[in-house]
Amino acid sequence: MKNILITGGGSGVGRVTAQLFLEKGWKVGLIGRREAALAETAAGHADALVLPCDVTDPAAVDAAFAKAVAAWGRLDVLFNNAGAVLPSKMIDEISVEEWRTVADVNISGMFLCARAAFRQMRNQDPMGGRIVNNGSVSADVPRPGSAPYTMSKHAVTGLTRTLSLDGRRFNIACGQVDIGNALTNMAEAMTKGVPQADGSIKVEPVIDAKTVADSVLHMASVPDGANIQWLTVMATNMPYIGRG
Image (cartoon, rainbow, N blue to C red; front, side):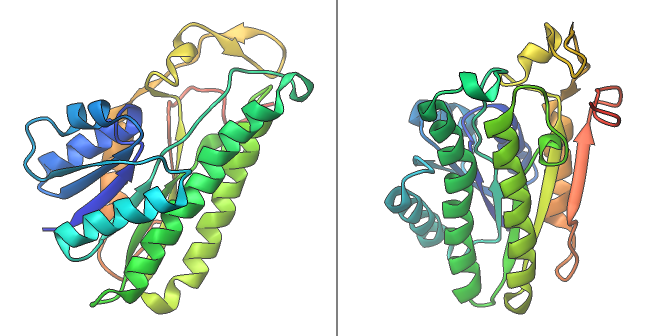
């Protein structure tokens, strides 16, 4: 039975993905700050491991990964998913504290979890594993008023590229899922109207978060020696192609 650690497992894409993996017979470790929310995700699943953890805390991350490995004996997959976002604002309207909140989760948190996973996968026997980073369509093109989020997601792409290169000799594969308008609490605003490049406010189409979970499961399940480097899953008619 394979295992996976999922950050941001208490809500949104993380919760839906965790529940799908559990239904498919995987052992799933749930990482997130809110223990009660993680427990809700895990409810009824004997193979779920609740691991309360702030991904921006290096010691907490290392402890959560160690707990999972102690339970399972190894780590097969990390879905590096936890993320933070701000409402649309021009850069001069964004406080330093708001910037740091997004950067701490989306950059430092991603780095710390990838670091812990890479260390374990490099040193386990048999060596290797798979890391799937949650990017965004904003890792390619921005939305209006999204400097911190867009910067952070471009950083995720840099992490994915580097891990893909550095992981080769350790049998560690790294890919990235770029998501556009999956319907979660974070994306609920899309259904009410969000700023567009021309200055207007428009409702945007969304997709079921289960579609994203299916994509992550596919990326995690390809045979050893194969990798899905980039996968974009999005609402067909969202303003992405031609954005701006």
